[in-house]
Image 1 (cartoon, rainbow, N blue to C red):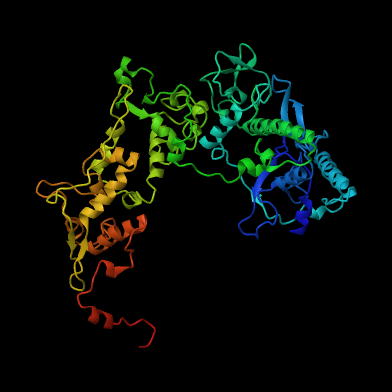
Image 2: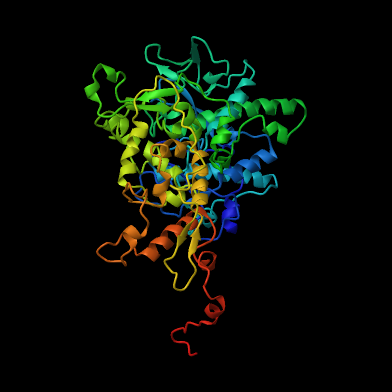
Length: 583
């Protein structure tokens, strides 16, 4: 890896090396799982510009952007302009000049691989030579091809994540920072945003804007704030650059403006290096500053942050039609009252559910599914699609993977009756804006209906009866359910919902609330009924399976905790010969 280290020296400063020209591109990467870890900073950028060629003639260059950025900033108070063109004209947009991070600076033919090669070589090597002439550590010269084009680069392609990066905490931090900005500072991420009507007082216009087709300009209007992706898509469009380009230009551009202000203050004080306190006054330039590890927020942490209000109701009735009362025949089920305020703290950000735009779901997802706006996903599917994390059922299934819920939800244990009853939990009709309150279930039970203990005698010939603390288990499960708003809401749909966790597929009878396990599992296992094990197997799968899923004791192989031997001395003397091993 010594050759790669020499390559990854001092070339450019800005955190993002997205190429913004033609068909050439830079690709983020991460270290391979099968190779030794890189000794340099992780997540290099793979440079694989082919121009009009069918394939590369030399191996891909794994370029470590953050290492170059950090090294330049340590040496001097440099900025991204050291390596990148920061302003350029884009003929596709009405605004003639936009912020970019174009590299190399020199113009070249983007379809000609030779032109691309010389442009990169000149940009990189000229910096290496300059540093070498100053007696500083530098990267390779022309002719040292193998030090950049490593045949077996220990990196592979990866797609950067966006949603986990900018969550409620990140947004709250930016709002607090914006409130401290000097009104004279022009820190807007877009040029000439005109404020229409009243402002929020929190300088939301610094980042948020929409394009007014009539006025041919960008405007900001209170309660019109939207997701960046509502306008900025995967590729450039009329009046809107791609999400990749605009995010880097806007975020890094704002950080650079703040850094420039801090830099000037430091220079006036005769300082050539920034202190840790200085760096807290502006955002990161390095890739890992935004794309690195980020903490997943818990609901109680989100509730402590200032709530984001953009005109949404606390409670709203979910329906495909804005006014279904005009024609009740348009809908087959009752309306779903949705507690938006409660759900706000269950995701990392608005984009958890509103993945493209902060509009009504029906704006994109129509009755039959609009291919262009909603990807062909119909309105009903966005709530019921079992494998989509953004859907109601999909999100609920993710929540049920929690260890506290896994005892019952590790597999489908509820009866058909309880599954059908779950529909009416949501489809209960309008509530006139009033939140639905579900009282916690009681923790005291009638001993006649709910036995305190149950003695299991399946293995009574060899062991004493296994004593199951029936009420203790139910109390524990009820307490877990009461502490979880989602569980409490759905478990209240039927009084015996928690009972179905163990008494699955059990029809209730009048004489006995729930028949014993032997009612279904008395016969030995049969291939004709693969889903119905014998009695002993049923107990072990149910009890031991639940303990394992929930991390409870005793574990599956700790047999004596449940099955005390009748004659301990005799049991200990019993030996079982091992096959193939002489006694």
